[in-house]
Image (tube, rainbow, N blue to C red; front, side, top):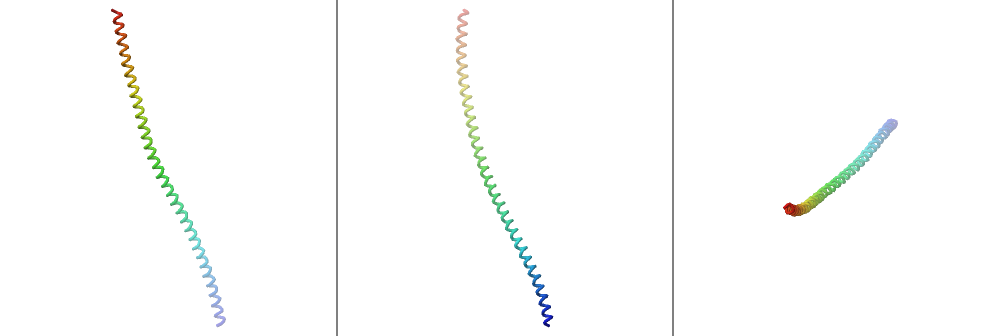
Length: 117
């Protein structure tokens, strides 16, 4: 009976030690899983922040692009207006030169006609 209890006690000790090892192993696995989970969560948060930053940069670039297009339209409009004004001025000068040339031609033709008479 004492021998029997002693034997059962020894068997229980062996079982308890095995269960403690299994418990320790399970706890270690759980800690590793938790650590991995924390790392993945951190990586996910970093990726989300990076994506948010990229979206903000895209918004700014889009706004800058719109602004640049508007400025370009203004500059092109101004250049076209200045070009048209230049052409109008040249036309006025050419018209004035043409009128002056016609008047000189009439004078020369008149002189030539008078000289030939």
